[in-house]
Amino acid sequence: YDPTSPAASPPAPAASTPRSAAWRAWRDGAAQHPSPNAGVIEAAFAGALGLRLGGTLAYAGQVEHRPQLGTGRAPGPDDVARAIRLARVISLATAVLAMVRR
Image (cartoon, rainbow, N blue to C red; front, side, top):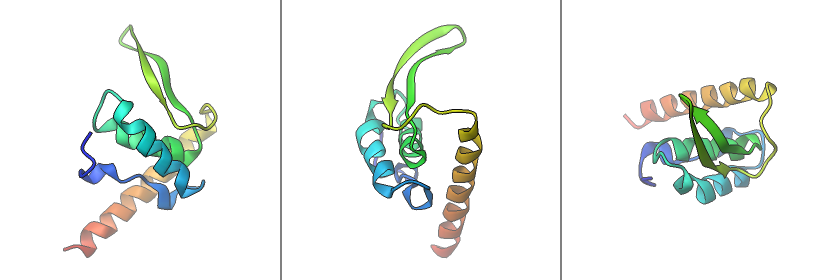
């Protein structure tokens, strides 16, 4: 992954858990993910939401074993709304920063 890319900064400031959890998950897990782009975001979100993402999964009938990102609990149905809220806050903050930098 490219730590200088815009997606490389974890969403810690908007998180409902301590910032350090998002930073730690980003630092420890992003490079382990097979996608240099998705790994950064998934790791940071896992930490920010206090979740553990990854593990064994299946895409189009192909089983994959992905590294676990974050050290929190396994996600549940209620975490979908939390993740959406976090994504919206990050999107808004990114838009504001983009406008300020003009």
